[in-house]
Length: 332
Image (cartoon, rainbow, N blue to C red; front, side):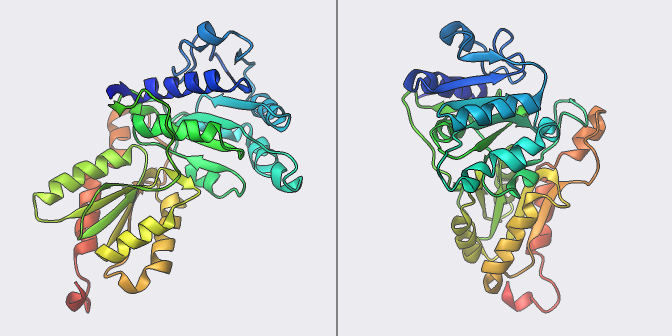
């Protein structure tokens, strides 16, 4: 297998999808000639033409609405939103149309469309272009929400999403586009299950997207201190593979949930709640959460760096989680 970046992996998945299904097309702002804000469609118009790779007006409502209509008529649109922050502009289309129509039509229509977008901080894009809003999307029944942490998963999950008959929001972290790993050249798909990135016996870290790398770095450093951490990359927020998470926590007895989004109201709260609900008797200490503070993403580099969680924040949470509270010493 060759090593390629996540940007290249997404591009490969798009090429495969276009070549294997005539119903697939993509549209978004500046995705044809310019190659998109995400720069993943840099050669698509040259290979597949302007009828398959469509530059749109600057109107997220129109873009998503057109995708919904095309999907209902049997096509498989891949809609690109430059930043996840822009879901606010087309939220009615996502919340009340894309997520609901298959249900409201009693399954007589399908919505096989994918919204590709980018999220996350760390590159100085400011408060309106750096948010992690996956928790909002996870609260909406009727859509799938995928969030890969590496190039291998990006290619396999995107191919699976394009062939899904349900609407999918595919979230790519902007700081991961240049990250490389080994990716097969042949066609493959990843399922919507969690991936155990590192096995351990003392504590479970549940995480996703860019925080997977930070969690693995923290786990390696903790291993040098005799703390054996298991790291789970959930990959799919909806549907959520709760079983893999619960079984891991039952094994380790401790859990730390890590994401880049704000702690308050973030998807980590749902993860923590499920752990406490389904593995309560095996938990030796309360679930800890690691995330960003409840403020807009700063633009200043030093403030943005302080805003984004890192391995030191994760390690501190692990220490706190493994620290016995009064009356718990005999359980640890």
